[in-house]
Image 1 (cartoon, rainbow, N blue to C red):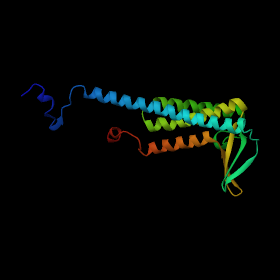
Image 2: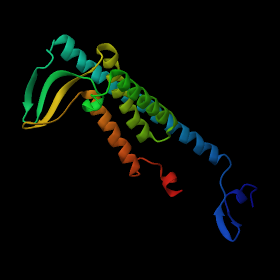
Image 3: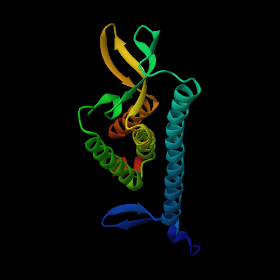
Image 4: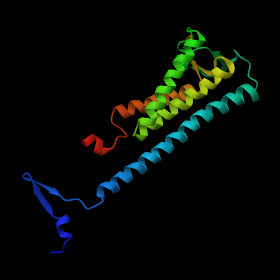
Length: 196
């Protein structure tokens, strides 16, 4: 029998048969996992930059190129108007009653937590979701730094009942949160992790 044959035959350990692994198989799997993790890292960075860039571009076009006046809204759908208004709170106008310094602290803490979570995560779905949230949150933070408030453009309502006014960054944050919720259901996780 060739010397390498025992490496591929079934062995007995504690009454249970197991298949012997080829030398270096664990290292190869580790390298593959690192490649997947690195690919997920770059994908999440790209998606986060797209979320940030899309919001900045839209704000530049509507506010600077078109010179859209603050407070003017134009209906485009029975439940959606496009306009321009400054929001003193965070996403979707929440916490608008808080002083500016308190809102700044909330935003800084939330961004720090998201970045730490993103850096420690090994799930591509989680990283992409977090990166989208971070991209949107950073864009809104830029508004707060430039204008002292966040520029919002889309007014969602049903008749006279107003839901909220938001921007592309807020929509991106919502998409990111939905991806995180999908991860909670097990979508996007590695089969090996689920089996364990």
